[in-house]
Amino acid sequence: MTKWILLHQGGQFFDCIANQMGSSAVMISVNDLVHKVEIKVELENREHYWCFNNQIYNLSQCLILHEVFYAVKKALWIYHPIDKKYVESAWQAYILSMFYSQKVLNPIHYGQLSISYYQMKTLLKMADSLKLNTPRISLFTKPSFAAIGYAYLWFQPHGMLGQQMYVETMQKPWLYIPFVFHDKYGMWLGITLPKDIVSKLILLAKNFQLSYGEFYFQKSKEYVFYGVCPKLSEQQYSPDTLRKTADQLRRYYAKV
Image 1 (tube, rainbow, N blue to C red):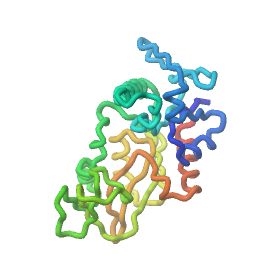
Image 2 (tube, rainbow, N blue to C red):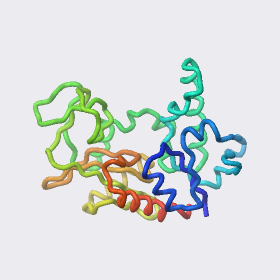
Image 3 (cartoon, one colour):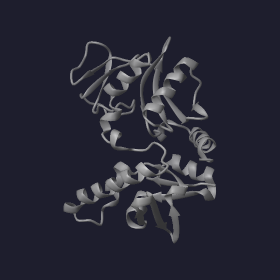
C-alpha cells in the first residue's frame, strides 16, 4: 500500500487520517521537517528521497498531505532573526518544487501561491459564473445592507472581525460542510445538498485542484454559497465528523 506522508502542525484531522491509515501513515511535523528530515533530490528523474527516523522514503512512491507551507516559520527558532526570512523562503521554494513533481493532495503551486487565490472576490466571481447564489460584499466601505465586517479578504465565517471586507449575511446559522473529492469517485459531502448544487461544487473543486476541505453556506429558502477553504476548521466539527471525513479520504485515495 502507498505510504502517506502527513506534513502536519499537530491538528486533530491529521491524527484521524493517521489512525485510518495505520502503518501506511508517516507523520512528520513542521519541526521535524526542518530539523530532522534529510533530503536528497535527483532533479533529472524528479525524485525526492527523505530520510526520517532511520527510514528512507522515495516520495514518488508516496501520497503527500500537508498543512505546513505557510507554517515553516514556526520551526525556525534556532536561526538568527536576520536569517529567518531567507531560510523560510528557501524551504518554501523546495516545497513548491516537491509539490510540482510528486503526488500531493491540495497542492500549492505557482498559480495559487498568493492567498488572494482564495479571496472572496475571486471565489464569488467563479461561483457567480456557475449560477450559485452568492452574497453581496463591500470592500473597505460599510454598506447599507446587513453585513458583517472582516479583517481579511479571505473569508471564513469565524474569521477575525474588522473593516477590510463586509459580507452580506442572512443571519442564519453558518453551515460548515466538509468534503472529499476524487475525479473518478466524485464528491462526498458531510451533509446532503441538492444535486444541482453538488455538480457546481465539483466544478469549483476541480478548478482549485482540491481533494478535501470545507464549503460555507447559509440557508433560508435557498442555499447561499460563501466560500471554500482547502483545510478543515477543526473547532467547527465533532470528533466523529472528523473521523468520517478522514475515512472518506482514505476510501477515495488509499489506492492511488
